Image 1 (cartoon, one colour):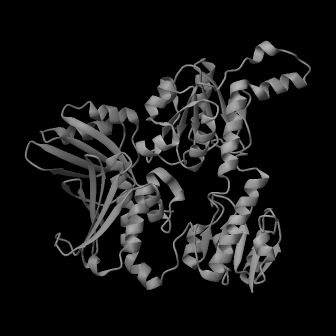
Image 2: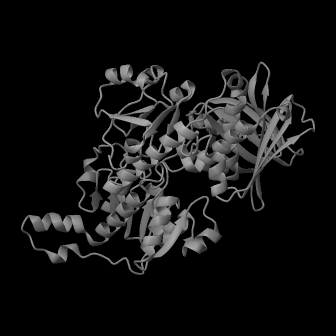
Image 3: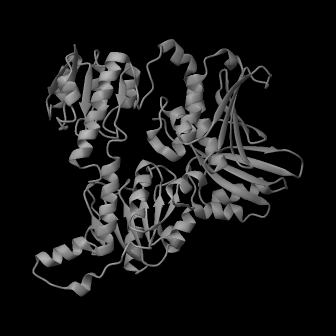
Length: 531
């Protein structure tokens, strides 16, 4: 018999598979205090929560019998995933259960925004009859720009087409072929800004999308544009949005998510041209049943047959194996993060090569960390070691893994190359005994860099005084340099400069760097914290 504990309000209909299974006993104790959960958890094989229960390291430490923690939803911020991983407990979620709910809420916000429905309702209930004050616009023959063509963005596109809208889709992994199959046009962010009458956002919140919709981007948009965000708070700079609406450039916005929740920005909440809802994207009876069904069925599979579909952490491996692999796993994820930023677009092909002592090892887990780091840049924390290769294949990106007997000058060496058309980016790295991880190759240049949070990558001509000019400008902006590496192919030819910085740099500084005579490109490369 398997025992399952449920501590949050979750649909009983969705849990029916567990309730009816002869090998499972289910205890539902909504609102169980943390102290009681800590003492009770040792009696259960699986725990199901939503967002209310905090599954802390202290609780996990008491869970000697627990095999699975299930989140009946997508986010797992309330679960200490690292502690669960260390304990050998799988953490699963239900990533597809709320797709239709979020899609339909987006369409509801789109229609409400176009026709001023909430504002008109509010005035009418007060006894006022003012038809002229709420003249709206039609969706027919308007252009909808969709930023993020994942599952929800794709479903929004399908439904918006039924209104007769023209669809522009942006996504790093959207191909011309897939766009054609969907009957939409593949577009970049600039085109969407220039041509869209409505813009809806469906991306994760990552470094690349934080404040993506800011003053600069809004200034490029078509006058009278309307903006919808049912994805993640923080993608839109809320103050910039209010400024753009007050100026008359943006006609209005509909927001289901906010930078802080509950939101406190009264200028946004009380604005007559902004529609707000309290993060209702997944709040339907059906969505809550679907996520409960997903986790129920997967718990049964995991405990009975060991089949795992939606794990958000790595499977348990021996302490000895983890100890020897740990430096390569950390380094692999960093390499993946760096190489995709060097390419600066979605890859069409990925090549992974191992040399030296690594060819004797089972490198599957390292390969997964390389791919995880690569995909995290666009897909955020939806990528994990279990689903990384699956997600890469799902995006239609082939990858090869080779073990080479050729000596690269290091006892161990690994390299990842990503390609898109004629564009190629490459990172090579090693673990030096006593010195730790080192990036030793960036594109065709040899370097020696300890991976750090903020790296400044510069392409320039090999001319005297370049290092001094770069250093002086960074000093003017109070940016401290940790280390500096230079590499060149030929004297006086193309060269690179890689600096580790104590803090990130802004766009003004990057523009200042590229204005230096002979400096071709300056790019901030960032390594995300481990999670």
